Length: 177
Image 1 (cartoon, rainbow, N blue to C red):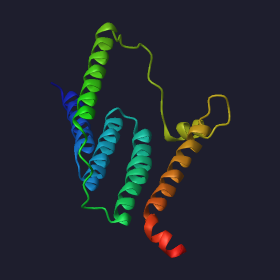
Image 2 (image 1 turned 135 degrees about the vertical axis):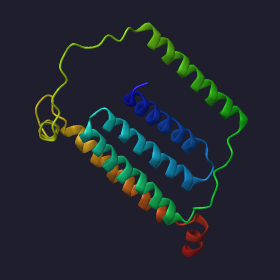
Image 3 (image 1 turned 120 degrees about the vertical axis):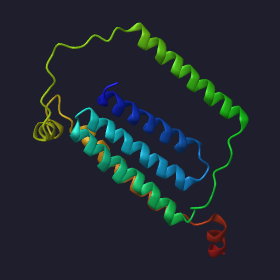
Image 4 (image 1 turned 180 degrees about the vertical axis):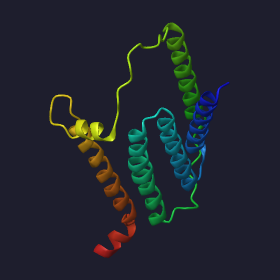
């Protein structure tokens, strides 16, 4: 096994294990930390594929933006030690069945295709070229997704503020009377 294959399998296992831990843990702060590790693993996979710009965007937007805002909202609401409720047995069985179906479906799709290597030379992806294409207003420009990402960060920030400023209904009704 080559070192490149080892790095890929290590990153894939890291992403899968931390993603599984993020979903299955009952502590909310640990779930946010495992989500952070999952996003860092995905960025590592982009670095391994030599897409440095996309990896940097992954770190800045998801790790630096979304996950940090989730952690701050957990800190602001003082729910560090709270545990999430246990899922019922029916939901767990249905989830496992859905995952098994998805893996089986993907396995048969992979077996059906041949995946021939491309003869074309890969594109020269420099940061200057990606930036020019991202901010282009032409037909193949990416200004709309760029703005959607900014709206995503804005809505995550507003959501964190709403969670942090949430006033219990009972105390607000007492203040009105």
